[in-house]
Length: 68
Image (tube, rainbow, N blue to C red; front, side):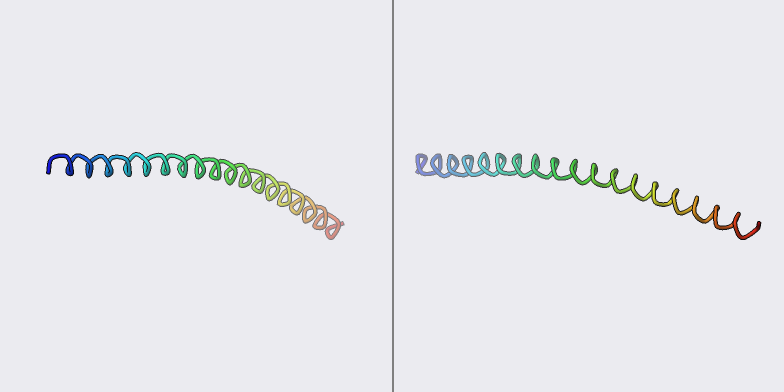
């Protein structure tokens, strides 16, 4: 009886160790994806800011032209 219980606990422990390893791997993958997404977000924010600035300049030039 004791031997069977120990074997059962050993299997459960092996499953937990395997699960922990899998979760650690998934966590690493998700962290890498998050880093890539954050970098992409920064690039897009820069593009948006540049486009906004260009548009504001164009509108300002247009207003100046209209007033003269």
